[in-house]
Image 1 (tube, rainbow, N blue to C red):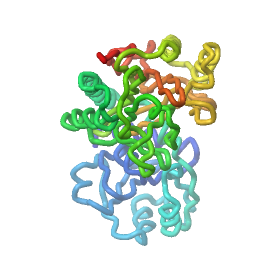
Image 2: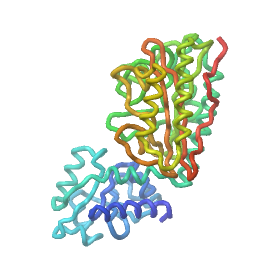
Image 3: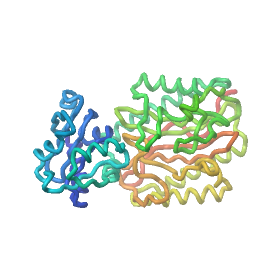
Image 4: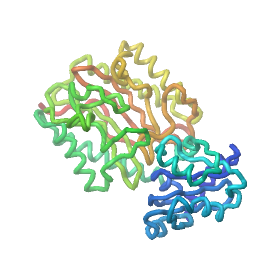
Length: 396
C-alpha cells in the first residue's frame, strides 16, 4: 500500500468519525482510482476504523495488480451485505450502520441497487468530504500536473505556427490534439458534473466562439453538430477576429487548463481593451492569491472590476448565458473544488490547484480572455501554465 493512498483514506476516515458515520462506499471510477490506485469496476469500502477493502466485479486480476488496498472478488450484489459484515463487524445488519456514498455522481438505479443489497443501512452524502480531500494535492500529483502544463505550452506554440485564415476551427483543434496525443495526452478530460463533457478544450474563432451552449463555461463554440454543440466547428477562421485557444490535456489522469487569445491580423480596439481588462482582473486576483483568501471574495472582486470597466454584461459570457464563477479547482477532474464563486466560502490552502479564467464574450464577434492554472503555496502561488501571454498576433 502506498503512503499516498493511505493518507487519502485516513483523511476520509477522520471526516467519517467527525460526522458519526460508520464507513463510506466509494463507487465512482475517479474516486476509486484516487483511494485505491485502480479504476476497476466495484465498490471500495472505507470504514471509519480499519483497513479498506476493494470489492471488485471486473477485473479482479487487474485490480490486484494495481490496487494499494486489499482486493476481494464480488460475485453478486446479493453477497455484498454478508461480505461487508464479515470484513467489518460494525457494519452488520443488527448494528444499523450509517454509510456514506457519492450522491453527486451515483445514478439513481445504482443507488437503488445498493439500498436493496443493504436494506439495513442509513445512507448519507459523502460527496463533499471526498472533494474536499481531493482539492489538496500531493507533491506527486502536482508533478504530473506540471508535465501536463509543459505539454499544453508546446501544443499552443504548435497551433500558433499553423493557424491561418480560412482554416476550419476543427482543423486547428485536430492539430493540437494530434500533437498532444502523440506525447501522452489521454484524449479526454474528465468532468464530475452531470451531463458535462470535455475532450481537449474549446478552440473557436469570431462569432462561433461566442455562441452560447449547455457547457458550463464562458465560451461555447458552435461544435460539429447539435449532437456535440460546443467547441470547434467547421467555420473558417477569419482575419482580425479573436481566436480563443482554451485547451488542456490529461496526463496519467491529471489535467491542466490554459487559455490564450490569438488573432490573424489585429483585434478591433474595443476587443483589445476587453482583453487588457481580463489581464488586469487576473493580475488583481494574483495579488490576493494566497492561503486564507476566501474563494467567493475573489469572484465578487472580479465582478466589480468588470462592472467598473463597463464590461459587466460581457464578463464570463453574455447576458443570461453568463456563468457564475471566475475559476475552478483542477486535478483528476476539470471541475474540482474549490470554485471561485458565490457561496464557496472556502479559504485557499497550500496544495490547492486552481484555474482562473477571466473572459469577455461579445455575441457575433468573439471571446477574448486569458486563463492560467495556479498552485497555492505556503507564501502565495506558483503559476503552473507558462505559455506566452498577450494577444498573439499572427501574420495575415
